[in-house]
Figure (cartoon, one colour):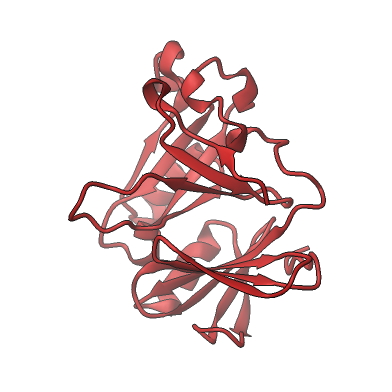
Length: 216
């Protein structure tokens, strides 16, 4: 997996990461100021205006930063949406909607190869699933189902956390498990030996045997 440059505000490289063959990418930013705890978050691709309507019906606190509202010279290639605090698993995730290909954005901040839609070779590793800890698994499962993920029931693993509730997405799965902390673990399928990586509070489990995307 090649490490690619990401966000470069003011010409200073602030993030790097990897892009998986099935589409998702991992964007690792510089550590926050001393005394702050890094907090991994998950962005799901989706239509923000649809999410705004859904949020009104569900009573969710949701803020959308639409690309159409940004000055053209500083606009990002996407729109972003976030849920307010105190809403369970929703407060640990956000939504992203690509408006244009970052390669044609015209804003140098987002010119990093990490953001290019075609930056992952077909033979690259794939992101199979993301584990998220939550204090109310039932509520979290219902909320994520409203956002388009499909519940499939209990899922078990040899690695901790060992059991959770799986929801299938278009390019990977989310597994909800008991406990706080938001994003806890990434399951990555690669054609190499099994490896466990620890970074920024997240455990990445690389499984041997090549790609086997659960939601395919």
